[in-house]
Image (cartoon, rainbow, N blue to C red; front, side, top):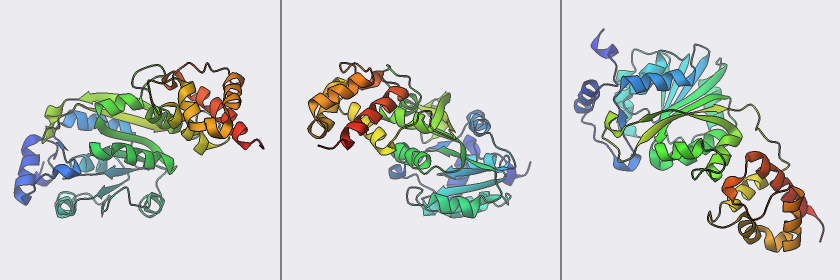
Length: 297
């Protein structure tokens, strides 16, 4: 194997590339490079790639994951915010004709336009990334809410956040993020990852999670925006009952009696807490509140 084709995701090769280019890590960008090939393989396998599937990578760093994706996917587009990494990526990705690098902030990119430009001819696209932990939720929600032609989202994120995304009703990890993620996808934790397999080592445990993007939501709602508003309101103060949270949000507009009636209609005990409600119950509740808010005074 030639030097240029050796796996980047090893401690020696990563350190060699960093040293050669005089690269220094920016804590503000949450840069932690993965140096474990076993975990890298699990990430790529979970993405379900083939020659008709594209891969969108967010934050490729020095290209360790990018090269593994290039060997499996029909097309790889990597979006990197750090201008200093662009020449490094150009060098290490030189052997791979199916890789494009875009120097931009993924939160500012028009993803629909990017998909049209980069992935024409691909049947589906999987997002694969070692995400900076400080922007995990905004990036994930942008990917899900824009309803892109996605197959899977496979990301390395903080273990605590992964557990919240995959949580079941009634658990301490279940919250508004859980409901939002599970509305758009089916989450599954692939593996947990020790902090020792990164350079530099983060202070938290990590996990790889796969979100299998749904063709359609698992519940039908009359007003999607209101559905998410009801979910947010229900978790506004976790220690409070559903009744107290909903009354604080909708009491003035819907009236206390109307709100009580709405809960009775959908057979939900107002003394329950938001964390005990399933997606189906949130859907019924939001439709009932929606009908109430539309009633003429």
